[in-house]
Image 1 (cartoon, rainbow, N blue to C red):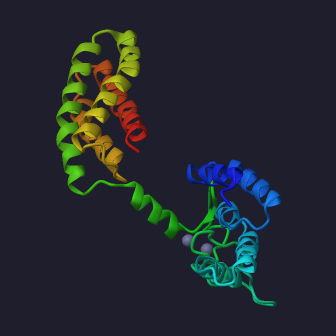
Image 2 (cartoon, rainbow, N blue to C red):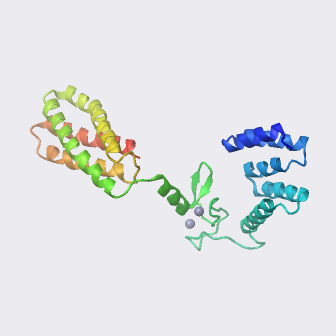
Image 3 (cartoon, helix red, strand yellow):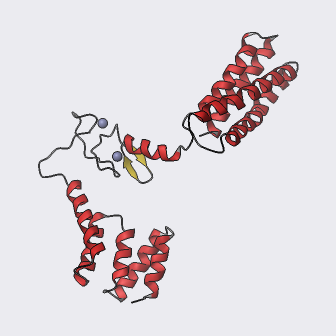
Length: 249
Ligand SMILES: [Zn+2]
Ligand SMILES: [Zn+2]
């Protein structure tokens, strides 16, 4: 009963080593085809619904009143009937009812056309499911945007003022320094914001900070003291906005 291969397979499954778990549990079943734990473990690591169905059927063949397997089997079979379009039935995108499609979201199973389907590492998804998962990823609240603005605007204003003052007197060398110095300064601003919002993620955090950098730089661009004095803040705004957008995703 307490087969060593089974235990190792279940442990592998628990830590997400799916391939390893699949191999160990299949081996365990070859040695002991009546190992219920191994069958249940295998059902958990195979992707294909047909394979899952088969695993649960094997369990029920061994223990007909196994409740977990009964419940799981009916769930799998329900999914299978939804997955197979009935003969002659044409599927249409749920957002574009006139567009025929063979694609489905692999999370909610809705029909989606090629335009609506987004390719993810785990297969095609509809935009609603992607949005839902992003919402789990973004943990920030609206007040974080205010915090980001309050932190980044003065820093950006100070940074662009300093750059313009110090570097616009050095001609081409000054521009070069602005180009390479800006990512350092605005990277620091991004980190300050990240710290200020306790590392919470928000969809538009980078946009807010980039906006603050633009607004802070605008007066320096519009009222230049000389040619280089207009270029330096322009570099700061452009390179800085790009930097924080990349950093605060
Ligand atoms: Zn979906
Ligand atoms: Zn569509």
